[in-house]
Length: 87
Image (cartoon, rainbow, N blue to C red; front, side, top):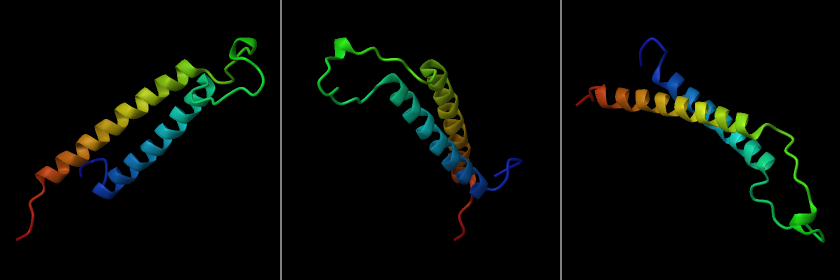
C-alpha cells in the first residue's frame, strides 16, 4: 500500500479508528444526556444535569477520528482501484 505498510495494516488501522470513534461518540452522547429515557418520579425541570465529561472536547476528538477514518478509507479505495487484477 505504500510507506504506511500493507493493505492489511490499513484495514486494521481503519477498524481501530472506527472502534475509537464509536467509544468517543458514545461517551459524548452519554455525557450530553442523549437518549435518556424518563426520570422516574421527577420532572425534567426539577433535575439539574451536570456533565461528568467535557462534551465539546469529546465531539472534537470524534471529528478528528472521523477525518482520520476518511483519509485511511480513501487510501484503501485508491489502492483497490490502482491494483491490476490477474487474468
